[in-house]
Length: 285
Length: 285
Image 1 (spheres, each protein chain N blue to C red):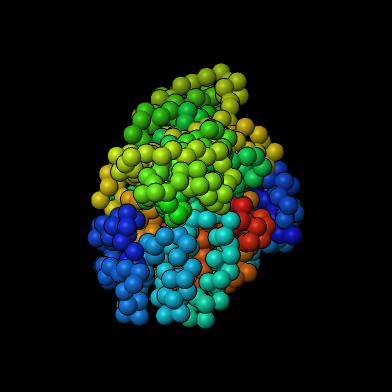
Image 2: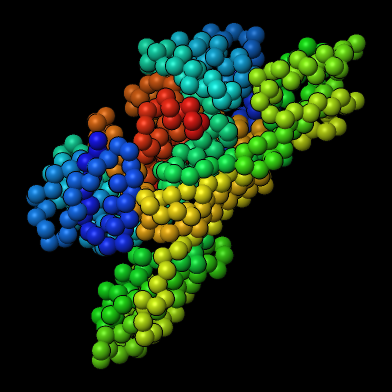
C-alpha cells in the first residue's frame, strides 16, 4: 500500500482524501495543516493542497526529507522556475516531485502535448469554463479588503477569456481601491476582468467547470486534421483525483531511481494507474 | 539529426516519409521494401510500415541489429504478446521498440489511460468512424479470391461497430465462399459484418476516419465527471505522423538506457516532441 498524506484541507484536500480512500492501492497517512509539525509527517507521498503560492516552500521542505510530493501549482509563467528550484533538491534527496498536477496545468497539458505529436503544425485553443477558477478566487481573496471572492472564467473563444470576479468586501473597505489592486494582480492583469461587489459569495458558489480544447493541424503534409477534447467536471474533485493518481506515479518513479521534479507531460500515463503492466496494457491499449 | 528509415512503402510508409521531411530534427535514412537487403539498413530508427502480421518478424530482425523500431501493430488481443516477444531481444541488444503506435491502438490508448487517471470508475466508449480501417481492409484483401477490398467501420454507439466490407472478386472466385471465409477471420468474427461485391473498390476509396471517445466517470467520490475526445482525420497521415513522433521517443529512450519494448501508454508525451525540455514545458504545460 502507498501511504499518502495531505497537507492543506480545503476543497482540494478534502477531494484528495476521497480519492485516496477510493484507490485500491493507497492508504491515508494523515491530514496536516500549515501550522502542524511538518517534521512529523511520515508518508510515501504528500499532496500539497495549499494555496498555490505556498507550494514552493512546502515542496522544498518535503523534498529535503526525501518524501515525494505532488502539487497543483497553477501560475503558468512560473512552472518551469519551480521545476528548476526543486530539481537539485529532489535529486540530492533521491525523491520525486510532480508539479502542476491538476487539469490545467496538468491533464490538459498532456492532451496538448499529444495533439502536437499527432499534428505538429497548427493552432491549439484551450477554452475554459464557464466555471470558477480556484486559483483566481484565492488570488482575489488575498487582496486587502476582500472578505470572500469568486472568480468565474468565461470562454470567449480562440483561447480568450473574461474573468467575472464577485467580491464580498471587508467592513469599511473601499470598492474602487480593492478593484484597482485586483486588476493589477498578475492573475488578472492579462484578461478582460470585471469586478462586482456582492452581498454573499456563498450564494453564488458552484465548483462546476469545463474545458473545450481544440486543434486543427497538419500531420506530415496533410492539413485539416481536427481534434477536440471536452470535459464538464467538478473542479476540486478532478484536481484531487489527478493529484492522487500522480502520487502513484511519483512513488513508482522514485522506486525506479528516476529522481527529480517533473511536470505531467514528463509522466508515463501508465504510471498513474493502479494494477499491473500486463493487465493495464491488455485492457487499455 | 535523427536518422529514420522506412520499411514498407504503402499508404503509411508514404505518409511517414512526409512526416520525416517535416520534422526539424530528422532525416530520411532510406526507404526499404520487404525483399531488400535488411542487413544494409543503417539508421537510428526504422518505421515498420508493413502489413501488421509481418511486424513481429521485422521487429525482431531490427532489434537483433540494435536498431530502434516503431510499428503500428493493430491486432488488439496480441499486443501484449508482441511486447513480451520483443522485450528480451530489445534489452539484450540495448535498443527500444515502440509497438502499436498509431491512433488506435496508440494515441487513443494514451487518452483512455489519462481518462482512467482522471476518473478511475466509469465506462469509456471508443466509437470509430465512419471510415476505412486499413487493418481490416488488408485482412479482407488477404482472403483467397479477393482482388481488392475496402472495409468501412460504422459506429453504432457504446463502442459497437458495423463492418461494411466492399470487395472486388478475382476472376472465377465464388462470392459465397469468399464471404464465408471473411466472416470467420478474427478481424471480422466479433462484429456485425456485411460483405458487398463491387465492380471497383478504387471508386469508393477515401482515407478519412474519425473517433468519438467518451467517458462518464467518478473522481474520488464525485460522479458525473464527463469527458470526450473527438477527431476527424486523414488516417494514414495521422498514423505515419504518430510513428515518426514515436521514433523520436524511441531514440531518446535508448540514449537514456531505457531499453525494451513499450506501448504508447508507457511513453512520456514530451519525448515525442522536437525541441528542448525548457521550451516545451514553457509552451505546453
